[in-house]
Image 1 (tube, rainbow, N blue to C red):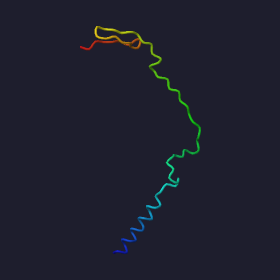
Image 2 (spheres, one colour):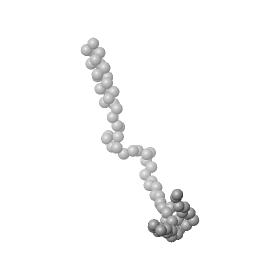
Image 3 (cartoon, rainbow, N blue to C red):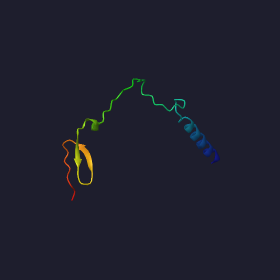
Image 4 (cartoon, rainbow, N blue to C red):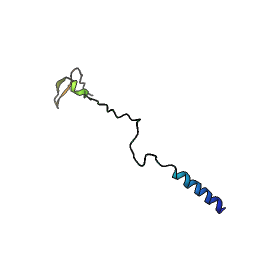
Amino acid sequence: MRRIICIILAFTITLLCGCGSKSGGDDTQDYGGNTQQEEFVITPMASGLELAPYSCADFSMSVPEGWMVEASV
């Protein structure tokens, strides 16, 4: 019984030793050698809005042109 446990333990250790990373510990991903960087220009949508003034008895603010402000009841 002891011999079987030793064989199973040796087999398990052998399997676990082979589960390491082949990159030598480097955590970077390999994407097939594609080193070209893509650049994105993000334009906020709010920058293209025309604002119109809105005011009531309690406050005043700017709202986007064409928006309707309704009072809640």
